[in-house]
Image (cartoon, rainbow, N blue to C red; front, side):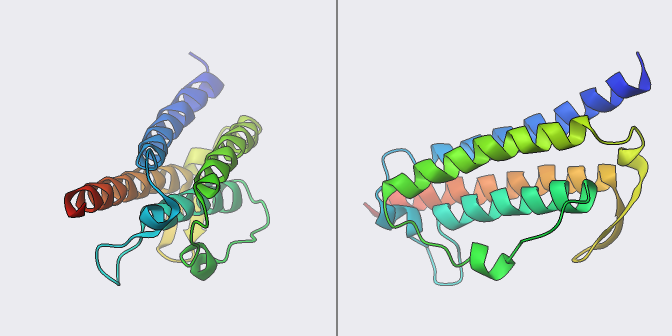
Length: 159
């Protein structure tokens, strides 16, 4: 197997894991009103909609900006302050995710073959490698998936 095929297979493994977590977060939207998408079990927590938006923006920043060198437009405070005004906002977020997946696939498809081993400076966590950033995104997405599913379950229990 060529180096390029090995890299593509490794990218696919990471992206499949991230996608599975994000899809599970979005599954939490099913049957919820906008108020329920915004509901938080305690004031310091995040609602399901915020968790989905933050996960999407975090993946976008870490892969497209840190790994692929695209310019950053990220405003982390703003991504954590969003609120769903209607169920349509959840649908729009899903469409943004679909578009981001294509953008990531294109960017990684054009990436240098040593991208996974190249040094990357994560402004929040310090030095890493391309592989380390992708592993972090797998973990980060899975953590927020768990948060979203637990929030949905707490919301159901309260009804």
